[in-house]
Length: 259
Image 1 (cartoon, helix red, strand yellow):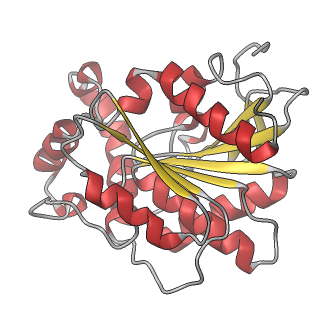
Image 2 (cartoon, one colour):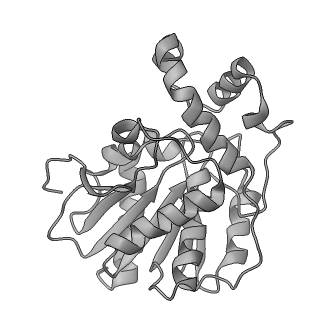
């Protein structure tokens, strides 16, 4: 994709890699602790007709001076507002881990508002709404040291960051806020989504099993499929080319671009 691979700000909540030739926008929702730049490595490997847009929540990166959001309802309203303000049809949603729940609920909220829904929902590394893993305790309620150890065990913290006490102090409130909205999320009964859902998982993911992923099939009246790639919980970032190729194939089929 021909671009500088630099995110620009489209709204307080949205960052994009501009692509005037795009036929569809792919909105990527952050997983707990992540900023919009987590998706930047995808930009050069996605097909050139896809414009990458990533949601930037308060408290991180260029919004680090803002207080992070704690309640899931506040996060999802902000996410839906950001997508509604910038989404031209057609568009798709992608979310990893807690971001998968944000993507799913954003699709529901936008549809309930009378807005066009996504043509495709992609979820990764997260069980269907209502699923909970085998964690013996809610991570966000743990003391700081135990909390950081639990996040580290998930593979979600850079070792260099952990060695810098000043950085840890800066990111700790954001991490705790994110895991608060993630772990206190409660799904509610609602009509099935009308768009297809594709669920991705890592073959070596010890946090989310295949059964949990396949339960996403119960949340759409359209096509559902799963794809498993080599790697752990963050397999989508270990091999972005593989995920990008799969996303492109699915969206090309949805848009009638596949030969």
